[in-house]
Length: 426
Ligand SMILES: NC(=O)c1ccc[n+]([C@@H]2O[C@H](COP(=O)([O-])OP(=O)(O)OC[C@H]3O[C@@H](n4cnc5c(N)ncnc54)[C@H](OP(=O)(O)O)[C@@H]3O)[C@@H](O)[C@H]2O)c1
Image 1: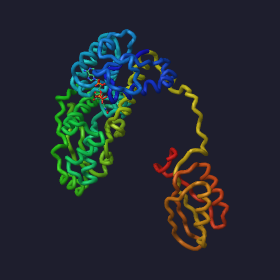
Image 2: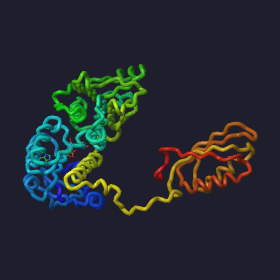
Image 3: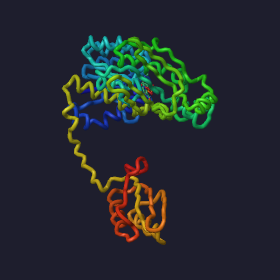
Image 4: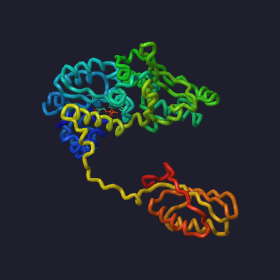
C-alpha cells in the first residue's frame, strides 16, 4: 500500500522517517506493508535527509492521479492550492491525513462532505495540539460523554513567552526574541501571538466536541502582544498566572468559543503548564474533568499524530487490526534486577561513631552514590534517611542485605523509589 505526500518540510520529513523506521511494526499490526510513494515539493533541489530523491516531484498529479496511492498525507500547509488538491484526492476515493489547521478551520465541512461523497476518510489529529491525541479522545473515547466545556492552552509559542515573562521578568519583546532563537516562534509570529493559531485549533476541537460546525470566523480572539510584564507581576501577587486560553462552552444550548489571555488561579491545573507545552481540559457531566498534556508542536511530534491517523485509516478501511495490537515484536521482558531508578532509604540506626561511613561504603560498593543524607535523633533511636542517585534494583537489593547485616542497624530499612531522577538509566 502506497502513501503519497503533499509537502516534505519539517513535518513531512519526520513522517517519512517514521514510516520507514516503523514499517515492520506497522506491517505486524495492520497486515499492510506501507510504502512511501510520490512526494510533492516546490523546490526539488533542496536536501531532504532520509527521503529517496527518486520519489520527489513538483507535479501534484503525480500524487493525486496515481492509482497506487491509497492515502494522501498533506503537510504542505496553506489554503490554495491545498484545498483543491485535497478535494481532488477525496473525490478520487483517496483517504487524506492533514495537519493543516488553517484549512480545516475554514473549509472543514466542505472537505468532510467531499470525503463522504468519495467514500474516503479525512483525518486531522495533527491539526490541533500535534502529538496530544485530543481529537481521537473526543471522537472516540468521549463520543457519548456530552462535552460541556473545553479549556485549553493550545499554542505553545505564547505559553513559552508568558512563562518566560513570568519566571524571568522579561519584557514581551525579549521573551518573543528568545522564543524565536529557540525555534518556538516563527520569524513572523503574528498567527501565534495574535491568537489566530489558537482560534483555528479551538474551532476544530469545538466542532468535534459539540457536533457543531464552528468556523474560524466564529471564534473571537485576542492575543498576548499587548500584555505588559507588570500585569503578569500583579497577577502573581494576586495569586494568579496569565495564560492564553482557548475557552469553548455550551451555554444554554449554544456554542461559545473564544481565545483570550486570562488570569488562572495558581492552584488550577492549567497554571502548572509551563514552557511550550499544550494542555486541554475537557469537561463533561459523566466524566467530570479529563486533562491531556503534551508537546503541541515539533516535526517528530506532529508526524507521530499523522502516522497514527494513517494507521487508523488502515484499521477502518482495510480490516480492523485491533486484535493485532498485541502482535509480538519479539522484544524480551527486562529482568527486574536490571531496571534503574533513584532511591530513598530510611533506617533506624544506633548513633555510634562511623555508622554513616560504614553504611555509605556499602552503597558505594554497589555503585549507588548518595545525593542527600538527613539524620535525626540520637542514641539507639537515631533515624538515617538517604536519597541515592540512580542505580539498579539488584544492586540496591544487595546493598540493603548488607545494611541489614550491620549491628548498627535496627529493624527493617524502608526503601522507596524516587521519580524523575534516574529511572531509565539517567
Ligand atoms: N512544524 C510543526 O511543528 C507543525 C505542528 C503542527 C502542524 N503543522 C502543520 O503541518 C503543515 C506543514 O508544516 P511544516 O512545518 O512541515 O512546513 P514546512 O517545513 O514549511 O514544509 C512545507 C512543505 O510543503 C511544500 N510546499 C509548500 N507549498 C507548496 C506548493 N504550493 N506546492 C508544492 N509543495 C509545497 C514545501 O516545499 P519545499 O520543501 O520545496 O519548500 C515543503 O516541503 C502545516 O500545515 C503546519 O501548520 C506543523
